[in-house]
Length: 262
Image 1: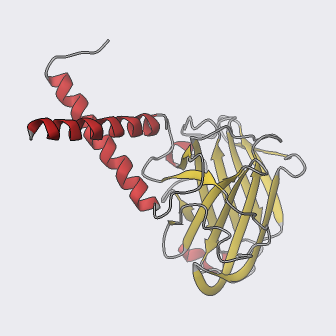
Image 2 (image 1 turned 135 degrees about the horizontal axis):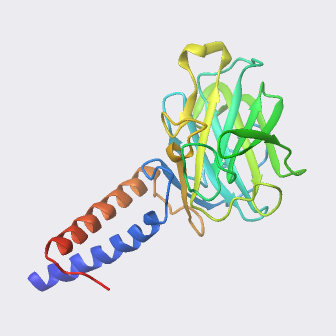
């Protein structure tokens, strides 16, 4: 019986350590706010709405709050990072509205935007603006033609039947000025409704700031295939948390026993 338990524990430890290696490569973005970037299985139509009920089911649904949800995939056919963001409580068209996606390409964090950090904004549902970090702030830059594609509209969706703003985003990863490498990449998603300024900015990771990359969320890794059936974002986070807990206890026990590896 003890031997069987030892075998089971060893297998769990191996799985935990493998997961720990994965999460351990994330240097700066917040692991508790992360998702795995799986392959898109269908074609995304950039029209600011769900072209079909399964258009965005290839990625994990990330519910930020009752106001905001999003998901993301990697489209291998176009070598692009693709996201859909839904702002459930906004259905007014204001010049002060904006969508914002911030990317920490090398996931090296920091308390100010570095040269590998990018801020992409669509202001007033009309104007695309792109900024690169300078080490202390941001400077506006011009993306390559076709590098960033986007569309938004007020529409219903499978996530919410009340018409609301939906934002679809496409970023080429192998051409242009940004070109984020394979994950991990820091990521911040935010939106603002000028008609409801009291609600403030809606953002992921929660309470993150656009100018502080170390507090952003995370595309933690590339999933190498379609999202596993029935595997939810919550389950992935729980698995990662359990693996880190088991492994950390294991290493702490070894350390206290005076044993050291080479």
